[in-house]
Image 1 (cartoon, helix red, strand yellow):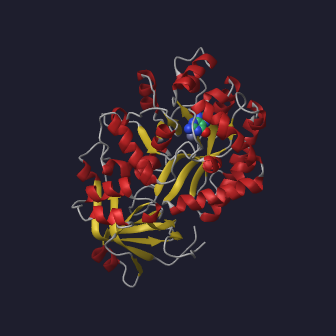
Image 2 (cartoon, rainbow, N blue to C red):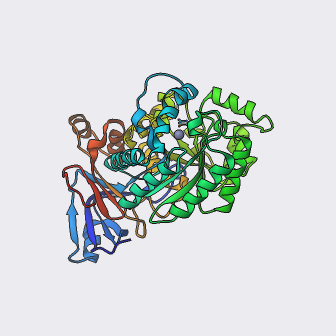
Image 3 (cartoon, rainbow, N blue to C red):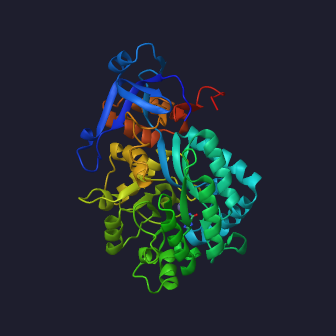
Length: 444
Ligand code: GUN
Ligand code: ZN
């Protein structure tokens, strides 16, 4: 991390001091109407009321954003596919047909490093302009597609997770690897990238449908051989998919059982979707400390179903849940849209997702799902300075609606329902401003 002069960001600040699913929501937040965050060498040094914090750092340079700005941790997207950015918003089809029609043909283009690099650059810059500072991302089968994303993330200093898709059946030949070849390619990528800068490798069996048992076995062995890597995959998204997994893995008690048989479960495992879980699967996810990524715009857009946020989080022994765009099955790169869709899906199940819970999921929750707790996802001394500055009055409708807001919760709810990337005034990554809405040139 580069050594740089300390500076302060001043405006309203929002941080979390507890899990709002476990304590009354008001007790979970720590907010200052006139707050400041001091950053030094890429880390947060102090957060609090501006008059106190600035008194502790006399002469520090201050970037003052004013009372309409909310300073908070950068958003963390716990599940996305960067090659799918170019097919976002493709018409029709449910999961398996959507994969065949749009996704697989597109991903074959990512064998080419130059093509992949252009896609990775676009993805990373769009993530930053949406206030997303960290993400767990699927690349394609090809090592070049992983190189392209990690190279771009390293240049930006971003905390990014990715891995090459392991897929050796039920997909176009051009996308297939083999159990042995996939292991070797993944291991070479781990040696090249894992732990470099802020990068993390994830062992990435795409989903049980596209891997033979031999490949899941080798993925389990790979993860055991490299225990500091993460493991990401998909699970229980769609009924036809679940039926297919039952046929492909007749010995397994359920979908999770197919992964579990090969050790693909536990701390550091991140299962995308998890809409149609059985009681046994829920119990095993809890017992093993595995995480789920909730992908609400995707679940609505592909017609997959209604995630049970209340059942999985509002209970005595909640599962780690992150919030995720799942682009391009997801229809937006905005975490505002993602929080809005999470709210709407919960509403369709008779549960109203409180805005403080939604913002917590999009930051602390997602960071926890990626085992980055204590590093990113919150504003506190010692955290890495991944920070977003939101303009709470970004558009005419937001401005009008905000006139009626008389609490932090209301202000946050208005943002998650009505705001978009125009509300992202600035995005800092490890203390460097990499996106500035109002300037064309940023420090890169
Ligand atoms: N299941 C397996 N692959 C994918 C994918 O790329 N997107 C989604 N939404 N589900 C998947
Ligand atoms: Zn996905």
